[in-house]
Every structure is written in C-alpha cells, then in structure tokens.
Image (cartoon, rainbow, N blue to C red; front, side):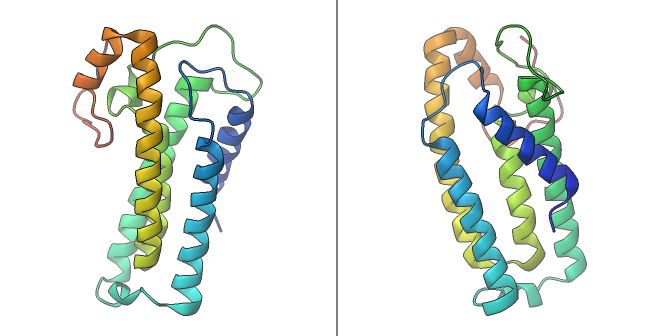
Length: 186
C-alpha cells in the first residue's frame, strides 16, 4: 500500500498536468511515457519481489533493517522534494493559481534544478531498496534516462526564454545531486 502523502502528491501532480501554466515547455510525450515507466517499474518490482524472485538475491545479503532504513529515507526525501517543488510551482492548493509564471530559484530549486522529477525518482528508488529487485532497478535506470532527456528538453526551452539568467542558474545549481548546505538566490 502506498503512503497517503505519496498518493496526495501524485494526485496533485496529475491535476496540475491537466491545468499547467508553468514557465517553459514540457515535451508532449513526457507525462504519458513517465506514467508508463512508473507503472512498469511498480509491476516489475512487485512481480519480481513477491512472486517470481528472479533478481532479489541481494536482499539476503543486506539486512532488512538497512534496506528499510534506506527505503524510508528515500521515500521521505522524495515526498519532501516533490511536495515542496509542487507548492513552489503550482501553489499550495488545488483551487487554482494566481499571478504569472515565474522563474523559481529558491527553496528546493536552490538545491537542485529538477526537484519534482528527483522526488518521483527517489520514491520509486525507495521501493527498490525494500527488496533490492535488480530487474526493477533496470527499469528505474531507464526511467532516469528518459527523465534526464525530458529535463534537457525543458532546459533548452528555459534557455530560450530566460537566456543568461538560466545559464547562470545552471552553473550554480546542480541538475540531480543536491547541494543541501546552501540555498541559491538570484
């Protein structure tokens, strides 16, 4: 069963996919392919972890306590990043947005350039940590490669719109691995 916070974040993201008014363009296939990858990941993870057990050999080598600790940390970090980026971009409620789209460089966007994508990836990685299904890890790597390409597509549009301001942001804020020690401000 999925944690309630994860379900509310996913539901909010789905609502915003239908009502987005963000800065820059998103690849037209992004939402569908990302959803497909997530369903495939969860299907492969569940089938491999609990029914076929083709690639869960590492689970016996890593104590359950360690796996669960890594899973919880991954879930919490993922839900935090997705939730905070959701609030920063779309506002705190689903009632609607006011004002114009703006370039956000503070909060989680001061740590990493794609916190919403990273949050989703970390939540799925948390599932991997619970059973160490190598087959699901292969799907996760494919999802990461896809999301990385979609992020590059979005960044090209942001460079077109914002120019040097976004290029400076790229130099100061990492794409995937957060710098938690300081917050970037423009």
